[in-house]
Length: 458
Image (cartoon, rainbow, N blue to C red; front, side, top):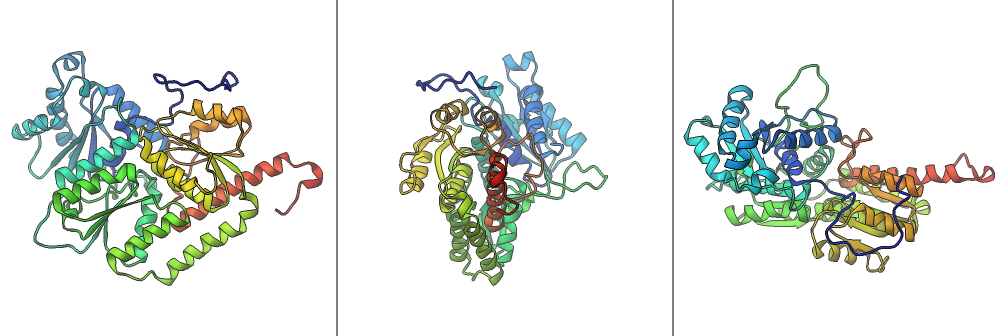
């Protein structure tokens, strides 16, 4: 299928092929769904909103509720203020959300729509009922990626809502990063296991992984309640999980409400989860329960058991920068060699320096690149193959062309099911991810084994 991909690598500046990322509004829409009673609104054409909804629907296998300002040719020329006002009137009259989270598109950004003014005018005109909220984030698709969009919308939650009063709430804020709803649930369970009272925002668990009940719910029971978002300004501290997704909101909260913050890697793998637990201990002055130590010990046990199959296996890792960083560290801890580490997001040298620091003692000559694409990764693999691909489903074409097994990890995964139900975060998530990796390699071992080595027990 990709047999025309050449081995010779030439420098490209103006072209991305299979770019290992998608656009900002998708991330913004996903973040907005993590607020209870919130309806995202895409300020642009209907086609943009349809694409964003369909992409999220196909990944999570859930209907995604979102509205659009429905630009016409006229609004594309003269501005979309009237469209947004009409959209807010219709949304609050027909769908009655508690909040509307507006994200812009390439079109509305290019014509220079002034969203803060439009929202203020809509409120003054009565299009926004009393007690209802409207927030917005600027999310042009020609800048950044879906990771940037998630970050911008989460920061907007702080900018519009967080408030500091004279009454501390003695809670810890946790910003979970752009992860699966099961990962958010895993983080909440770990925090609860340690006896810590926390506000997790945005929280997409029980929103895009709701159980089938037979009854349609426009606004599922999950999501961070708006009063909790307002109360984040009274918390003792903020833990931001993921440099490129959560840091902006944590910094905004620190500047606005003087809530101290710490930025950590996503708690994927042993060491990243250890650092998360250590930060929880330091900020909350609690002692981890024995059950948590047992969970950690089980992950270490699985890593030890599988070492013989993982040792010095060459891996190509690609996808969102925060997930790629934690996964790379986890693979190294398991004895594997991440020789190619790539993200499509334009996050620059900060990403590259972090990954190279992880790999400096094990794979010092690894190729690490930000703002790269899967075409480049394919060329690297053609020159020097790997044993495994770890990343989103777009790598399946490389896997098929080069006959390399792939473990699906990250966003998007449109051709498999179950990924939104099984976490890769925290200790139990590490066990799931590691077993998935090891079983994939064992499947390949069985497939390629001659009759005399086709063993019943591995």
